[in-house]
Length: 223
Image 1: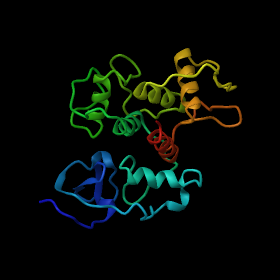
Image 2 (image 1 turned 45 degrees about the horizontal axis):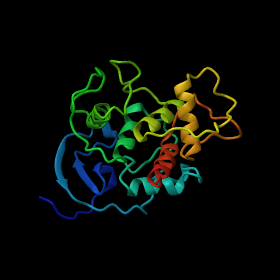
Image 3 (image 1 turned 180 degrees about the horizontal axis):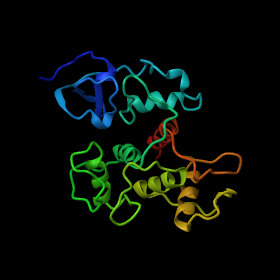
Image 4 (image 1 turned 30 degrees about the vertical axis):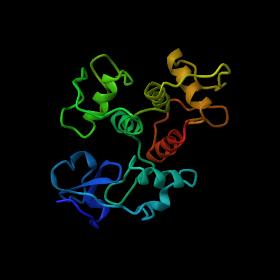
């Protein structure tokens, strides 16, 4: 039965923008295990309801975090965002694919570590089918691997077809990176999507949830 309902955020898992599915409540569960659907309803979640760990969100990410939740791109669990938590490759490609015009579907995949029926399968396989997703090898996507800033830059450029401008950004810490990754970093920096600080890009640092929220909101404003 579909209709409006008011439920606690800890009991929901985002499936599509403004459409949520209600799952069996488990206080310690994370989204990856909340997959047994007990009921599906359309509900409205107030984007102004604060996360329980709201005070941990950095000031530079605050607005983006709640905008990302309102757009259905990033939703916390158990009413917490855990803004400093690092993200995996499948989490980030899911967010990026949600922001594209691709029809998300269940395609075959060559990646042996992309599990059929998992919450991320359709997003990874759709990206692979449309040739905008690369794995860590021909047969592995890198499921479960934490993603670095450099890897995230490359993922963004692949999904959205970005290329650097003529004037390359002069970061001092890109030595040792392959040319394709350096060009990706230049592209996302040129577009002001994912920039460095004080002349450094910090390519090997991991991407956090609050960091990803800022990037996603910048992408949403691209022309």
